[in-house]
Image 1 (cartoon, rainbow, N blue to C red):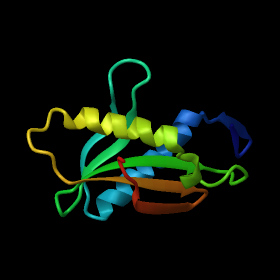
Image 2 (image 1 turned 90 degrees about the horizontal axis):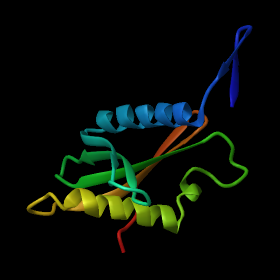
Image 3 (image 1 turned 180 degrees about the horizontal axis):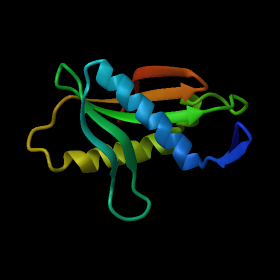
Image 4 (image 1 turned 90 degrees about the vertical axis):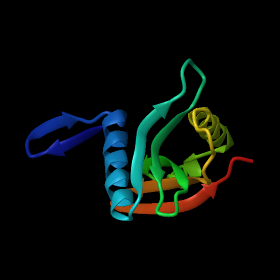
Length: 129
């Protein structure tokens, strides 16, 4: 992806675009009162899962957040891009993360969708079932 700025051309990678969306989601959720527990949690090995952001909500719920950024809506929006397989990988990673907890807190899976200049927070976007 290329972005023009003045007379210069800057190459912007998909990772940089995703990181910027994640930074924006992080600031937004913190402003809503959520406390960051961990960022970019990955299970060991190949084929595991990753969770973009893990928060503790004001009611002590552990919130696993997937951040999706889409600049083009031709293939559906950011929320539509999280299919069953992606949900399973996120749930797998959440279960792995929770293995170290002696007592399991209430948990929730949220999605922050960033499309152009719009950010939408979908609480309980999917469940672990």
